[in-house]
Amino acid sequence: MDTNNGSSITDFILLGFSDWPQLEHIISGIVFLFYIVTLVGNTTTILVSNLDSQLHTPMYFFLSNLSFLDLCYATSIIPQMLVNLWGPTKSITYGGCVLQFFFALDLGATECLLLAVMAYDRYAAVCQPLYYTIIMHPQLCQKMVLMAWLGGLGSAFILCSLTLKLPRCGHREVDNFFCEMPALLKMACVYSKVMEAIVFALGVILLLVPLSLILISYAVITQAVMRIKSVARWRKVLNTCGSHLTVVTLFYGTIIYMYMKPQNSTSQDKGKFLTFFYTIVTPTLNPLIYTLRNKDVKSAVKRILWVEKWSSNS
Image (tube, rainbow, N blue to C red; front, side):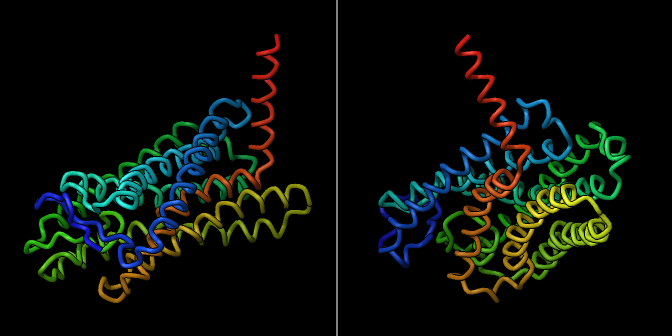
């Protein structure tokens, strides 16, 4: 398939799924459906968390931030992906590629840190219930979220600037459906041990350290849950913690495989589908996982809809 029609010599070519042209229309339909669900689900989560006073708690403050992050993450990737899947060209401008690369790194790193913050929140709620409101006071919650966003921003700036400085020797074909770091590193015509060391070090800081903290938090939570005698409270803890642990498993499992292995050890086709999972599927599943299993959110939606109905009838 010719992917260069109408593209400038300064543009990058996103190869995407052009090796399977017969699947591109099917993939575009799936991606469009996932994007709609992502927009509706995450926007609903943000609105409900802010409109219902009973959800003005640290857990839903963090969940609102996660939903906003997922909205931005999906929007930084999917519209351009759909344009390329539907149109005759597969190109993206250099500036567009840089922005997509930067925001994908920024938002992905922020989500890694935010999920660790949410695990600490669950630890405080389950293991220190009497002191929960004292520990997780609004100022601390805001500072923790701010640190997550700044950590993602700083790491994205470092990796983006170093990656874009690597010589490409005229290579313009990005063997992925968006400008992601592993694909851009493979475009370079030199091998940089320094770059690989920096990627590994930041991977440890942004992936392995937060994941270790999450696992430690849930190990302590598991011990606390085993001592709970109330069946109702036991189920509530499992629902809220189970939702978060599901999201953690889906996100970290795929992204660690992609970023913590040597860049030449993962087949590109396999890498594309792993990338598809944590960039397209996970932002769609997050609001479904948190809301479908959460009675508090369901009740809040009913209250908001009832108030709107009552206001329109009065």
